[in-house]
Image (cartoon, rainbow, N blue to C red; front, side):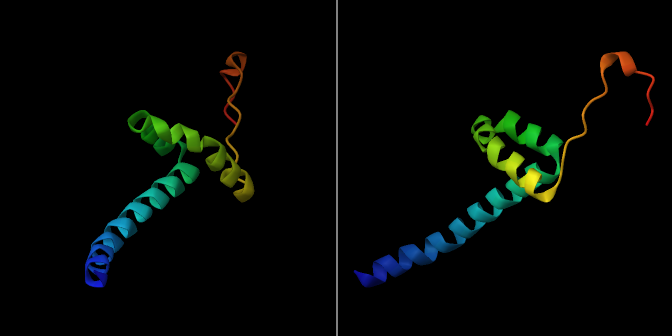
Length: 78
């Protein structure tokens, strides 16, 4: 019976490694690239539940989204 558990564990280790790597890669992509975050949310709606975590990591790293100019300042080119 111990050989069966070892066999199943040997099969699941690479699968789990791939899944965790993809998840962490997508999370980091969402933190550093808001357009990728929007794309992931459009394809995986449950990803939106991670928005507070993504915003917290951005805050820790000092990554702030620039405030959009008001509509009446359309000529501003700063």
